[in-house]
Image (tube, rainbow, N blue to C red; front, side, top):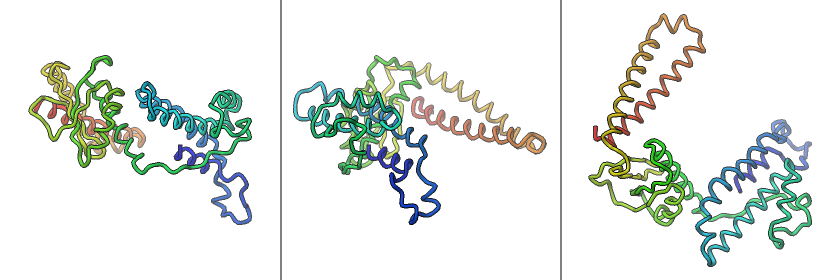
Length: 280
């Protein structure tokens, strides 16, 4: 919400700019309505709906003080999100805002005359949720790579780079959002496992025995890698041919070089996947 506030304020510019004291750059900044609209949309659709609401469901189903904290944060964020959206989606946001709990979160009679959202202080550890998000995204991608059915629960071991506190505390959320049972581990085991390296240096090891046919998956992966290597070799030879690069249009050569970079990256990923899964 704070990020969306900053982005929206920057895109819109000051409400009453002092033109006599502003530089030309400051005068031309603001009123970038498409950027403002995208920032507000991203807050509601991606951050609030895709992540916060999904991670919140377990807390809302349990009685207690934590449930009320979750409800309060949800109401506050949705209230402010509606205020951000109101200038470009006036009628729907007004109708929804009127249905929010009355009180401190809704001091004005109408959203149109309510105050514009302002930043709030947040705990320093709030940024650690990015670790949770990265773990969920990586596990979902692994499930897609190995065609693991959505309803099949799998096990995963997290080897934390520094402190594994966030992964241990949020294991239930990571597990629910990725259909995975999360456990903490000190290091790799002798089991055949898929290996995931997270941006913070932590690792996730997913034992695949009994989940996928490892031998069949290895054969399939080797075949795909051989085909890709053959295509990449031919493409590299073509780009090394001076006659081709000199005669072909620049945009064609550029597209081929981009393809070469993408295929090279894909090859490296497949080789790493082959090493972790098949040991070769």
